[in-house]
Structures are given as C-alpha cells and as structure tokens.
Image (cartoon, rainbow, N blue to C red; front, top):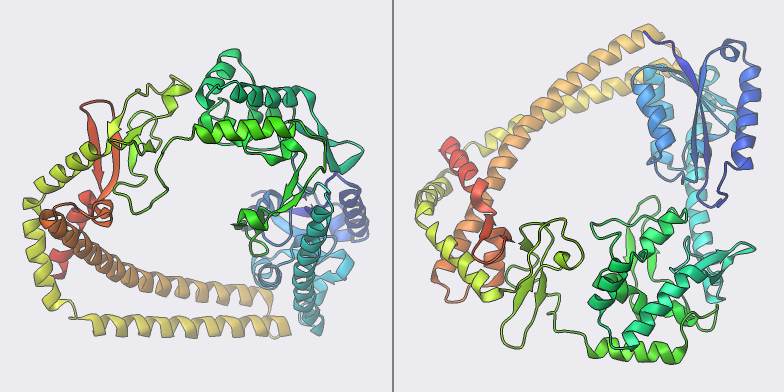
Length: 530
C-alpha cells in the first residue's frame, strides 16, 4: 500500500496574464509551507504540489484539481491544503460537496490557511457554519468580478484598447503595451500579397494553390511556429484553402479598424458562447496601423464579391442537407446551386492528395433518385414490422401501472436510506458517533442505496429504451409510407431515413440509413412486448 501524502494546491486566476509562474503562486506557496512547518504531524509527511496557473475557479475543469480528486479517490491523500477556500474553487455547491461530504468520507483532512479552517479541529463545532457562508461569498464574489471585468473590457474596447488574447494574423501585441497591436512585417507581407493577387484578378483557389506550392505558412502554421498558444483544428490547418484566403479578405482590422464584441460569454463557469449580429459589434476606425490601404481594400472587396458563386443558401430544409459526404476524406461536400443543375463537389482534393479524393460534379437530383430507389426496395421488408407495430398499439398500456408502482416503491426506499445516511452524518458531526462506526454504517447504507438505484435504473432503461424504439419505429414507418406515395418526397422525410450518402466517384454511392439498426431493434422489442 502506498504511503499517503499531503497535496498542496495553488491556483492563479485567468485574469493574470503573466507567461511564467507568478508571484501569486509564490506567495501561496510561502503561506502554505509556513503553516505546514508549524504542524508537527504534517511537517515530515511527504508532499505533492498541484498547480493550476491561469485557470478560473468557477468550475472544476482544471488539470491540477482533477489530479488531486483522482488521487483522493485512490486513497493516496492524507491532507489537502490551500491558501484559502477561493483557491480551491468559487462554486459554492461544488466546494461544499467536497469539503462537507467527500473529503470527510474519504478521511482526508482539509486546511484553508487564510480562512482559519482545519477539518480536524472544526469537527462537531459551530465553526462549520462559517464554511458554507464563505463558499457562498466566494461564488457571489466571482459573479460580481465577472460582471466588473466584462464592463471594464467593454469600456476599454469602446476606447480602442485591444482586449483580445491574440493579435490577428499580420499583427502582434506591442511589448510595451498589451492593449495595443503593431504590424508584424513577415506576416503582414503575406496579407498584402493576398490583397494584391485578388486585385490582379486571381481567384481564391489560384492564390491558395500558389501559396501551397511555394510553402507559404498559413496563419495557424505561422502562429504555431512563433510560439503562439492559439489552437486551430482541421485536416487543412497547414494548407491554404478558399476559406483561409477569404477570412483574410474579410478582416476589417487590416484597414486599421479595431473590432470587438463579436462574441459574448455564456453563463459563468460554462464554455458556451453567444455570437452577436454584425450591427452590434464595436468598431473603432483608424485605431491602429493599417496593413492595407482603403482603396486596395475597396477594390479587393468589389472583385471578391463579383466572383462569388451561387453555392446555395444554408437551408436545413434541403433534401440531404449536410448528409452528402466524400467517401475518401469523409468531409461534407460543397453544395453548388448551378443555373442548370445543382451539384455536389469535394473541395479537399484541391489542397491535398493525401486522401485520394476525386474531382467531379455529382448532381443532386441523381443522388436523390438513387436514394429514393433504394428506399423503395426496402418497402417489402417493412410489412412484418408494420403488422407487429399495429399489434403492439393494442396492448401498449398493459403492465404500465404495475411498473410505475414498482419504480415508485424503490424510489421511496432510496429516499429513506438517504435520510438515514444524512442523520448518520449529523450524529458524526455532533460527536455522538465515533469515526469507525460512522464509516461502517455509512458503507452499509451506500451499498443498499447503490443496489436499489441500480434496480430502479434497470427498470427505467428497459422501459424507456423499448418505448423509444417503438416511437422511432412509428416515425420511420410513417416516412416510408409517405415516400412510397409522394411524387417528390419532402426533405424532412428523406432526411429522417438517411444518415449519410458517401460518394466514391462516378458509379459508386454508399447510403447509410438511420433505420438499418432500428428496424431490427424494433422487431425484437415488439416481440418481447407481445
């Protein structure tokens, strides 16, 4: 068995932008080390440090804290020590869950030096009331700070101060002023060349092909080479594409206009982002040195707009919307609304031969006709399923009441066991129950709760999964019936039946249907219920 250790946890807020370990971490370490040295039973115990430098305390999605919690569950920790509660976290409910429930259950001592809290000395005393109050204040403080920072950044943006983490390609942050960007000449030269080429009647693809042939670094490759932490995913991340060129041509910041407010953060502690309409963006003209002159910008925009093809609107009601894919690279094919015949085409082959993608136009109507033909061939196989489904409707209400009563009875038993467990913990906190007895009785209650919960979940899953399959069966049987009678099937009908259409070149199409597995599952479910 491994010897238990002390885990010293330090966290620094996202608001600090220092690239190296900051004085705040150093200060936390000094406070923690001094406190440990004064506790004889802990002073000689082996210890481990966990640091989250640059992470918010409003959630527990932090590598350092995850490492600690995993070690705690493995039984490797004797004590966790932090400078104060806010370093551990600012979410009141989650922090309280760990300090008040999980750590006592695992026998882990928790110390928050600045708050004067030590779980060993606070057991069974009214001082425990201070913990949830402090945690709630930390959560409220975090929300208030979030609002304050948001308004401060908005005010800075309106004054033209650069507030973004990364400078746009062609610029870099001024070492003397982090709220100001200056021209990065090597990258700016690439930007100027893009505008010059578009003004000389080169197309996006021609420019991309030229840059790829010459080995010109893409914006993401350039930033990565120069040590930027900006991440850019995708198979074409190191290749120039139509969209890479277009993104540069659409960036107003190249004419000296600062832009902010394009995205708002969602709820505090989440990663959700809300995209604002363009008319709500903050724009400050002539705010920083321009890479592109206004007349060059205007000419490039006019030439770009004059050559924009009819690629079709982003219409989720279109038949096979986002379902037609290249069989080689797996990416969605580009939809082109031609004046005569709409078609799909793979774009990946233009930029790399790695996947073996083919050039060519694959006409929309031919693909739809092929899908409809294959669907029609499956109609006969649905007869048995339709008969079983009809029979199922006659007996669908049988035994439902009995099942619900069983689930309610189990739920009531679980609530009783949880109440017993809470009462057990209250006795332990008050000192009327010793530690050994508490852990023994709690373990027994936990075991019973787990058994009953598993029993209830099995009943819920069995019932809900069968009901879900039966509902899905009805949906795609209805779709089959409509597509068999409709002259031109509606998009929602086809899209409900088809998961994807993979194109491998002329003469080879693979269709993946959503009902392939559902039909077999539905048959089995119906037979069980009958």
